[in-house]
Amino acid sequence: MRFKIFLQYAHHDEDEFEESSGTSDDVLKAFDKFDWAGETKKAAEIQVISPTVSVETENGDLIWVSGVDENEFVSEFTERPTAAKSETKDNWFSRLLKPSPVFRHDTQNFTRVQARRALELFSKAEFQSLVAHYREANSS
Image (cartoon, rainbow, N blue to C red; front, side, top):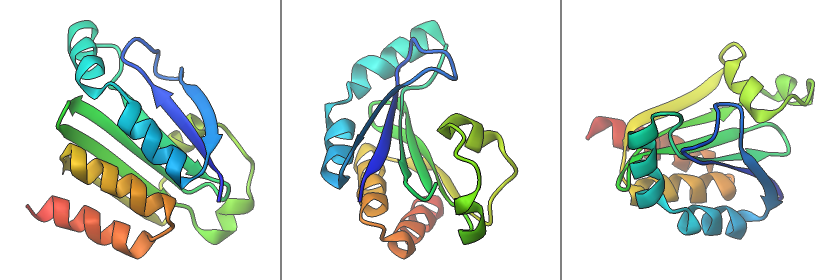
């Protein structure tokens, strides 16, 4: 499966990002190579945007993880209803602003390890495990 991978750095505007595409391995590499310590420090200083890695499937399912500091993350996973997956192909940011899809899960409580695991589960399309992962983070 191919994914769109979006990187948003501290100095970006809210609708600015770097886009690439890749496999599930590329998703994890993008997360691992991201300078979370440096970018979250910059974000705290300039207060423009939180550093974020977002990943979208060809069907429009979306996950993003955003660093508050190098080991504190917020995240959201949105699985679009099957009927909505064939709708227009807007850019990923505009999809975040549309009315809520049927399946949306979020957390304010991920560690860096949990954020990476969420991306891994998403990239393997293990959505039931991913939902359980969010619930577990929210219960602790």
